[in-house]
Length: 272
Image 1: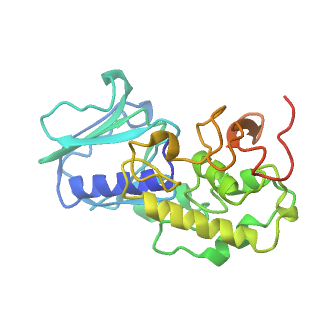
Image 2: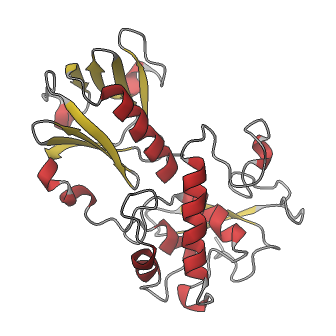
């Protein structure tokens, strides 16, 4: 699942493959960009902003993409077949002289002026992996609504950019607190500690091919790579209690969180 670390790594791969070169061809398979041709334009840089990707061109244009839940950019030498999925899932291809970037299942693609990027990402809070990370501002935003549930506050990109559902589950477990705890009920020091833990986890995982939040040595120990996420009914690594799931978020965008009912104290999930 794409989170801030995945997007950071994707931006680096795209930047290394395309920055400084001119596109030989572009192909967009989405109605909004179907007639757009970026061939001949030089890619200046590709940068991440939270879960967003910004590919900037020399003439002041930016290709903005968001991976959503299943999107991926695949980079391969130009002339070789892409391997990111079936052809009907391709939404964009940026062909350079040496490398081609192919976007699969990307729900959001738009072209905008670089000077107007704020219309797409200006609402985001401090970026955990950004050069201007501001923990004090992130904490201020995180605790701004005292009645909000912890899981919802952590996931809100307007508070802090880069935390997705995987890290929400893992952070709440590491803090030994229920995801359904209202912010007002948390100890005063906990929001800052959660943000520091989030920063450390994303920094540690941004260069790894497989995400890891435990001390498992490598990806061969996949069942031990994460504390609770994706481990429903498996024993908790700490206490052996089966990991459970519960829902949170608005009815039109429900989310599932993983938790240990023994290790994490506080309110339980609402009944179905």
